[in-house]
Amino acid sequence: MIQKLIDRLDRGTCNFTAARVIIEDLENAGFKRLLPSEEWKLCKGGRYYVVKNDTAVFAFVIGSDVPSASGYHIISAHSDSPGFKIKPNAEIYGDGGVVSLNVEKYGGGILYTWFDRPLSIAGRVLVKGADPLHPVTHIVDVKRPVATIPHLSIHLNRGVNDGNPLSVQKDMKPVVGYWDKEAYEEIKAKGGIVKCIVAEAIGISPEEILDYELNLYPTEKASLTGVNSEYLQSGRIDDLEMAFGALQALLDSLDTETKSTRVLAVFDNEETGSGTKQGAHSPVLRNILERICISVEPESREAFFRSLANSFMISADDAHAWHPNYNEKFDPTNHPVIGGGPAIKINANCKYMTDGDAAAVFAEICRKAGVKCQYFVNHSDVAGGSTLGNILTGQMDIRGVDMGNPVWAMHSAIETCGVADHEAAVSAFTTFYRL
Image 1 (cartoon, rainbow, N blue to C red):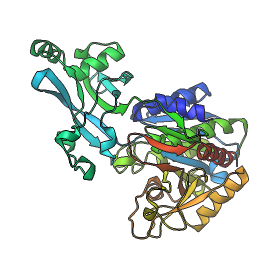
Image 2 (cartoon, rainbow, N blue to C red):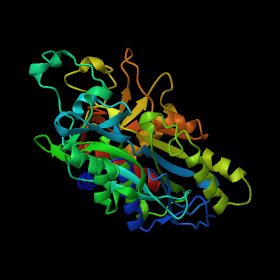
Image 3 (spheres, rainbow, N blue to C red):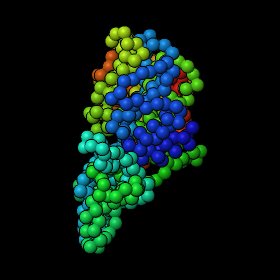
Image 4 (cartoon, rainbow, N blue to C red):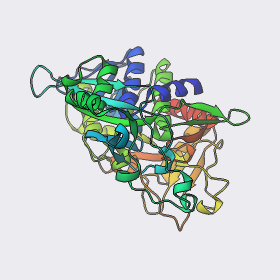
């Protein structure tokens, strides 16, 4: 199972390529794509998926019972991770012909972990379509290292180990190479170095590119570490470990016919507040669930509201693992450890949607799956974040739990999670889908 996660992490280098990985696996399992602009005619046992803006994917399997009676079993996660996005007109020409890129920080990453790593580029490129309203999209992954963000030597910054405030605009510009002025001007006339790099990867002319959304990512492959290979290290573990784990659970559950309709909801832009058309603040999931009801139970809208009342959602987003070097940062009695199983997230100020009812449900799912679970509660003097759960319950009247697997160095360029925890989460998710 862990090898499947490693393979998906290596292919899911950004939100666009992660969505493509999910789509490919769904199609290989017989799922049919539905277009929001077309009428949906769904059948019991049917496998379907919807894509929103190339980065959010919603898959579902219609249950043997109507949704109003048996509801939806939903697992939600997100496809995005903190990092850097390449701005338009990105090239900056410097002394010696060195060319660096103008980038913008995406989300709340640990900036210094991005220095001195081989970096590549992935995202989407838009070219001319049949008419101005319908450009053609290419999902691109350059794959080879094409950039690095070089640190300043300690000899020129003696206080670097005593704390080093960073300016994204000044300190985090990735270098892509050096060119003499004449060669650089020739490339610039074609659209610039960035467009030339991605055009070559796609197999098109750089002049064809209308626009792009491109991310930097570390090219290191996901790898097992620890004496007994008990840890997995990779970029983008938060939250692709949960997204890909939920995907695997959905696929593993296909051997079972269920009364409930199984739903996988992978949103985008959680790291920046979810306030996009493909994010959890949008009505996209609610609309999909209602359209399922309209197709399966067209008699009245009452069926949709009854379906929500009979549903349960697992909001899966990784949690902070207890750190042996920073014990004082954690709650003394509720700190999840790597290897201890999935963690139920609880917050007294309701930053998570978990309540006693939801925690009991998830704990019982884990017991039924034969896996351990634990709790994550913030240290009382440390403010915590929030995730998808509360946003989604603001959209729909639905029961649910926020949970996640314990992770070290969340939002670092390279994060660490537990192999056993991933396997346990997939087991719990599969059990939930089979209920």
